[in-house]
Length: 265
Image 1 (cartoon, one colour):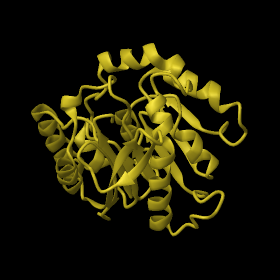
Image 2: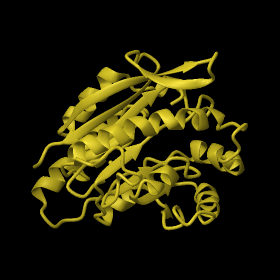
Image 3: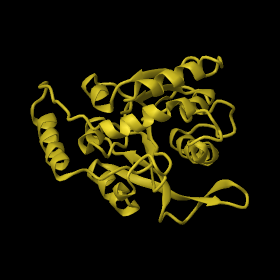
Image 4: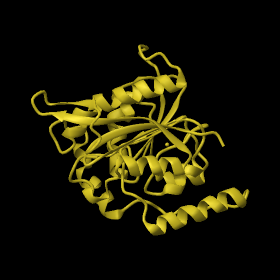
């Protein structure tokens, strides 16, 4: 199953697949039959598409031969996040929009995962028994609530300072202290053949990425289809300045989140 989202704010799975559009081939090689959530990132370049096609052919034809992946981490973006890392848990800091948006995103994720895995959405720990990864986890804003809902959570980020902040915050609560934070990339986990039940990739506020890299919902559906992932649900995220909160809507023009399922191979 897969959950992805796209926005101008802006899975790896056990028997499932994750949404990774920086390196499109990863979606296919991490494939299984489960789910992914996230916000759209930039579409693959022509070079990445060629690389993805080559990797796909190698994976299917080479058997045990090792496939090497181009790193999708951008040094400039990593530097931006490193500079802001100390403010991840500042509710009035640069990540304030994420703190406000998080309950709405989590609501969507909870509903989609519970329906897919036939879990009780009213349970205090509906994700018990699930192994979930958050790719690009930052300071752990999503990992912590997922852990509190019973999931075995892995959070990865290419910025070591983000991981250190996430670790320091998580150990304060016994319900989050077990989160497996790693400073690594999705490509590395593919090489290590890690798999998860659900993969989540969410994006972050304006100012941290180039808006021109937005993936539209139509582009997202096509990319997911190419990775044998069918999009089952998509919703817009709309900010209400009067209430100072976010709600789900049918408007996917700017901010959206989607859920998809990887077809069995």
